[in-house]
Amino acid sequence: MSDTPSSPDVSNLTIAVLGGTGPQGRGLARRFAAAGLDVVLGSRDASRASAAAAALASVGRVRGASNADAAAAGDIVLVVVPWDGHAQLLESLRGELAGKVVVDCVNPLGFDKQGAYALAVEEGSATQQAAAILPDSRVVGAFHNVSAVLLEDPAVERVDTDVLVLGDDREATDLVQALADVVPGMRGLYGGRLRNAHQVEAFTANLISVNRRYKAHAGVRVTDV
Amino acid sequence: MSDTPSSPDVSNLTIAVLGGTGPQGRGLARRFAAAGLDVVLGSRDASRASAAAAALASVGRVRGASNADAAAAGDIVLVVVPWDGHAQLLESLRGELAGKVVVDCVNPLGFDKQGAYALAVEEGSATQQAAAILPDSRVVGAFHNVSAVLLEDPAVERVDTDVLVLGDDREATDLVQALADVVPGMRGLYGGRLRNAHQVEAFTANLISVNRRYKAHAGVRVTDV
Image (cartoon, rainbow over all chains, first blue to last red; front, side, top):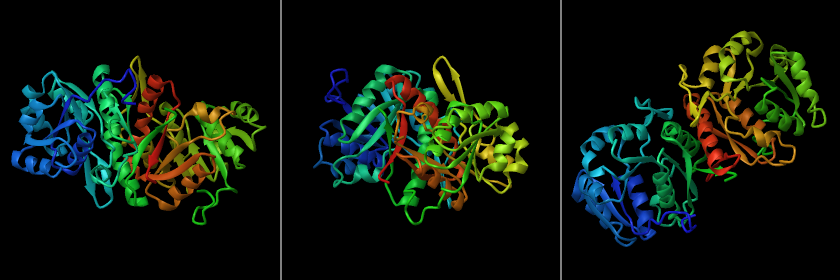
């Protein structure tokens, strides 16, 4: 859907990935770089980010930076950090993230012997927490249910999954849908307002259950759209 | 998947649908009856249930009854009542439902001008509330995300969607997966434990958002399974 006339053009945008040295961040960076976008991987430790970026040099234009520098450089900033440090990181980057489209990809999950489960979040969801911390940013939720294993696997040419994009700012959600659309197989779909982000984040726990039962790397497709 | 050797045989079971006179209940009843199962529609008002059953007479074996009589008659009992009366109904049917597989299909949702949203449930989810009220039943959650419009439409031959089946009792979830599998196009998938039911129920709010945006009758497919 990225080349339909009504879809925003993301080809000249720089995509920052905060927490870009984890599997999900690296995997998303790989896919956006492969699609020809400029990617800046952010990490608390800029040298770790540079090392992770170097490992993707053959894929496309990826560089490493501190989270703050990555946030400053990105036109769209993805937040792919562990839930544990989510609030603190965003509080520290309020200035850099002001005015930008910030895409929260974080799933607040707990794990025990019976698998994964959703954690309660005071603000309702990680995405709503981000929106509360960043009133001057355009916060969207997306990329919650995409398998990091598939994203990171160079042998996987198409990531056949829908990306539910959540937000109250239509221009911002349209932009993030277009970003998802650059990845072969991936489709960005509007999935509801911020207040309905929790269940999309939490649904990752169900996909983990599916993966265990069926030995799969499960994703989601929405039918009839 | 209904005819794989490992799948339980549901062909001789009676399926009760409590709250069977609403669109979702009527739609599920239609599909199970069309697949050759015996269906008992339950309602607070047995005569309303009988009228709804009579409207499905050409489809298969469907009869109407009070909710209590339907619960007593069913081998598998689906709960498809409005969230408002959910707890009270189940409390009133503890005896009838003891020892049975009870399938909670209820989505606790609120609606306002901006659409649907998930309601907070003290027990975590409608399914967990049912499990708390019915300690002597085998409570499973399923059929949350299936479009009533498609289920009810006689022109729709296949309901192409996955049904996520949630529960802690493997034999019961296997049975309900097999029940989903009798409907052409439908596939029952294990979707996690009871504690992960909330987000599947709440996800219906997202599908309602999708339906509004894309003029669709959205459903869910899990990929890579």
